[in-house]
Length: 198
Image (cartoon, rainbow, N blue to C red; front, side, top):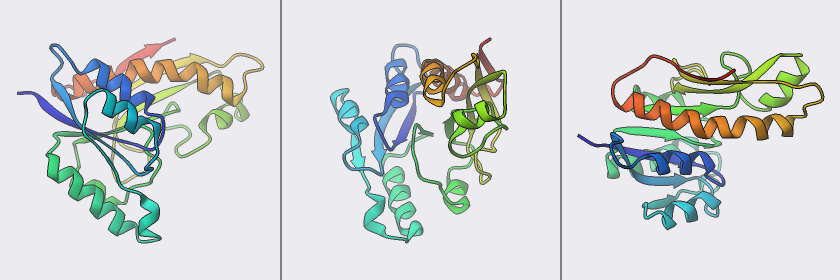
């Protein structure tokens, strides 16, 4: 049976579109909605152009009441009954209470080789640490920030003189390749890691 996928974004939606473009033919999933916490996020227009339902839930309208914002997101998800929720550049930290409601059904992509560099500024942190390699990780979302089971990683070499912007540009195509592969396998019940890159 085809599984329904909801995608949460905050920006241009490039990872969202890589997922959407892969969900056709014999893929076990189809997108059912794209939700953004930023009303003018570029990814909403891209999703709409692809014929996918979209919804903006502006977190700023909830002030500091994160619980009310999360309730609105949860209610919107429940209304479309997704089997899997994919975070794709969704720039809000979700509470353990929210994530518990979607336990085992939520994926995220993170721009580092987890468990290294959870949180923000991952590219610069890899450079500052003198790392030889950098990359991205797709993982299950748990209550621990960027700490859920790893489902796939793509690795690149950090070249001498690379800046954080250079690394971001190098990693992005691997994000676009890795996330769809992991989603396809995850939807088929497979949890072994996908490995791309060097």
